[in-house]
Image 1 (tube, rainbow, N blue to C red):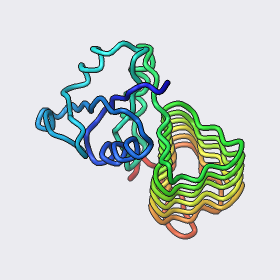
Image 2: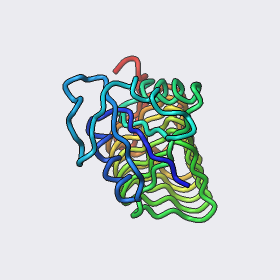
Image 3: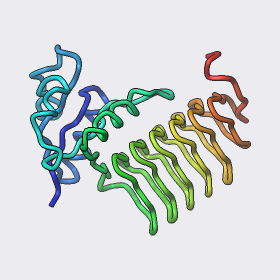
Image 4: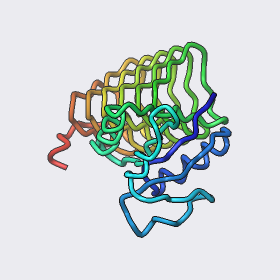
Length: 215
């Protein structure tokens, strides 16, 4: 039986998740947020209950959690939230919008978020706590690591590999058989035609590398 969920974070990404969860028939207990000005407000009719301390009021076997914090670049925030509560024994809900097209033999790990209009083709693997955002396209046999964000409208050709913590920017394209390293960042609109090493940022068409620390 499906467990009710609590969403951690109450910003824009959380609003999209509330909509997804309602569309998929999930029960939402409420949201938490560190910003006290949001406490008592509502997102699509669901109440922001208070700080993350609220979660401790619910036994680990009674609820599932959802990371409502988005990302626009490689970030440790989503990772830290996920690891903090998994260490306490909580599990994270797999969020899949009913409009998503999911092929055969696709593996989707705990805490992954598959947004509206996405296409994930057969044999793909989606890591834990990873976002496949609105209308992104993941072709056959891609391997997407943990804590990755594939932003809206991004397109991955077949057998692309994405390392943990990478960010694939809005509207970017990655041709088939490319490897993107851990914590790499693909800028919005970039076209990637060669492998990208760990921790590097690439921009442009064709994409050129730049160290993330220099941006």
